[in-house]
Length: 224
Length: 224
DNA sequence: ATATTTTTGATAGCATTACTATTATTTATA
DNA sequence: TATAAATAATAGTAATGCTATCAAAAATAT
Image 1 (spheres, chains in turn orange, blue, red, cyan):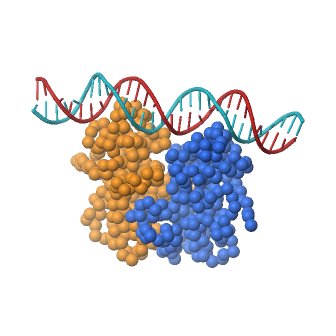
Image 2: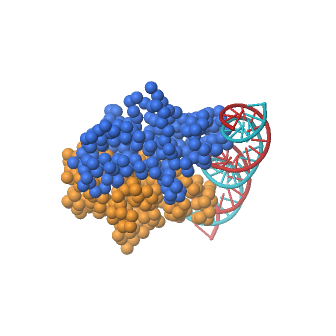
């Protein structure tokens, strides 16, 4: 079975919707592969064009520059996690269980019966871990924010914060907890990999599983 | 009264120690001013050279590239916060009080009777909030880490994690808590400024004071 | 099936960036 | 005051980021 999903991403992110054409989808697909492989700083439209047998000019018709392409990918990721959380908490009534699903979604960012799309969610998650915050730590943030380019992030945090409040209605900082949960997940996965002395994740074990355990430990202390 | 401090930063960060010459100190001083003003992406050695009436080539004798200059600044910041924590917890015996001082140091990153040096710590802190993680989210991280370029960060986290354990010896993830505390401080200050819907910091009030309050609330729940 | 519009490819070009090299001049030190 | 070291001045090169133009191909409308 194959399900097709298309997220409505803010249209300021692109010049032409990459989801609507073959070339556009190729740009998305191979930009993920390439940024994952060589990193965002070395990545550029020239290299991508060669990789997909197209031209720089053609890619520039979809995205103004590589920064907005990255922001597009990160937006897709925010929508994706939001979608995952909604999908998996749909029939759950127990709030505590819901929160565990949130954590699981943030840490693994994948479904078992994975959807057939042109996006490799596992690579995309790794890009978000490695390069994600660069997408919103720019001097254009106020302008970009004013036209809604971070709406997907805010929506995701809102969804998580509501679940936090379900678990503990008296918790004073649900949004901060939610955004910290998102950022902490990615940070600790990053540290476990590259700077293990900044974490307590055992080096030999599966990082995802250990980070998930840790986050649940933190949440338990914070909310119960 | 003026006290001069000089931190021993990893010598792989620079080609020539900028603390040892007038030009070097000018590079540091004005790179902070300039990155703060125009952001790290638009900042380059050409512009800095013009600003300080020197030349690109001269700056390249101190730093291999702008990435290593940023990493130098961030290292200086890590050392600075570590220094602040040690200075202010020196005569304190109460562990809980010590942890509050840690939080205060991370949020304000400054002393009342500020030291006279060529570094504007308040601007530097803002750079760390805005650009800090870019310094360690690079594809060269393993190489840079292997020669000790993140030692100052690890030392800082170790200091904080020991205080965490003093407060609660049973807490399972002291390093993760410490690194999250560092990252969360900067993230929430950033969000409060630019993406307030990702926090619960009241928009009108003083962000530093509110973030400090919030972090203490989190720590209280986590450790007591 | 053919005309028309849209999308893509091919090519060129230009300003800026990131760096390196060379030599002259200034500054510090012996 | 001689010598060495640091800096300035200048030039240059390869790569990057981006724009423009026009032809070919593909999609769509008639």
